Each structure stands twice: as structure tokens, then as C-alpha cells.
Length: 115
Length: 110
Image 1 (cartoon, each protein chain N blue to C red):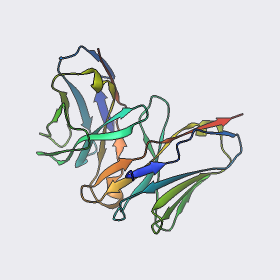
Image 2: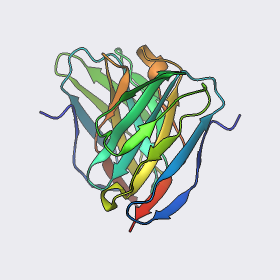
Image 3: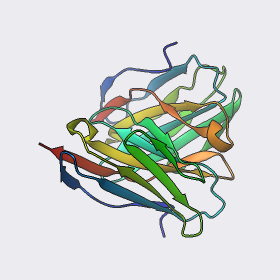
């Protein structure tokens, strides 16, 4: 049971490039989400999904796309990278969306630098 | 008022000290409350869920005050290994999303 895995761990992009951050979980969790963490800003929700085929926007969705074709995978796509997207990205999953079933478990993160 | 606010910190305490963190939340309909611990350059990890009646796990005690809309975390007999950033999290009832505070950094010194 690997929990939540993320790849890559580190990435450097040039402005305008696109890329996909991968996230997978093997706990059969329905709920998955993406956060970014910046100094002084805390964790901010980018997008989330309550199940396969269902996604929705969080607090800071602009510049990012997501899809959820399977329960296990929830990739985050940067369409045209900008320096403002330099951040640490965390993927998280939880069993459900009510009560303590919304306890979230985080992946190890991807450190992204956009030049 | 921000949805979730925490003491700004940092807290610098000697080993053996008792330290308390507070966190206020704005949505009175919030149902679930958590404390997470985040080590430097690592992911947040669940420390404790916070129950209405309060709960204790070894040296850690979490309390919830619904009337005043705050949660607290008490660490007794601080250890060097307790040095980390502590994040509180509150669910956003309509979506089930967790909203995190910005965290409070704790440094325990010998």
C-alpha cells in the first residue's frame, strides 16, 4: 500500500511550457485534490474531485486543468507555465466528503520552478 | 475575516515546555477539524482529528470550542522532535473540502 504518490519530485520549466503533474493513490479513495503551497500563503486548493468523472474548481484554479478518468489517478496539467506558478504542489486523497471521512492524506509533493 | 486563522508564531520554547496553539474558523457550519504536522520540505501529515468532547493522544491534547469557533492544540513536555509547523484544518461543509490555516512554526530548543 503506497498511499499517495506524486511524480516528478522536482521540475524546472520555462515560461510557456506545459506539463502534467502525476498523482495516484491505491487506497480506493473517492476524493482527491490538488493544493499549492507558497511561503506565507499556506495551502491553497486548486482543483478537487469527488469521484471518477467529476471535478471542480478550488480557490486558485486559473492556469490549471484536471481530469479524473479513474479512481486512482488525478493528474494536474499546467497549460502554459508562468513564473507565478513556481510552488510546491501537493496531491491529497480522502475516503469521502463528510465527517472524519474527509481526513486527507498527502503525497510527498512536487517542487516546480518556472523560469 | 479569513476562513481559518492561526497564531502567526514562530514559537520558540525550551525542551519540556508546554505550548498551546489556537486556530479560529469563520464557518459555523463546519463539521470536521484537524491538526496536521508539517516538517520542513515535507508533506503535511495528520496529527489529530479534533472531537467535540476533546481528545488526547499521549502528550497532545486537542480541544474544540464551537461557541467561540476555535480549536486548540496543547503539547506537553515538548521534545526536540516536536519542532515542525502545525497546521489546523477545517472542512468546508458545502463541498467537503478542507481549508487550512497558514500554520504555526514551533522550534523546541535544548
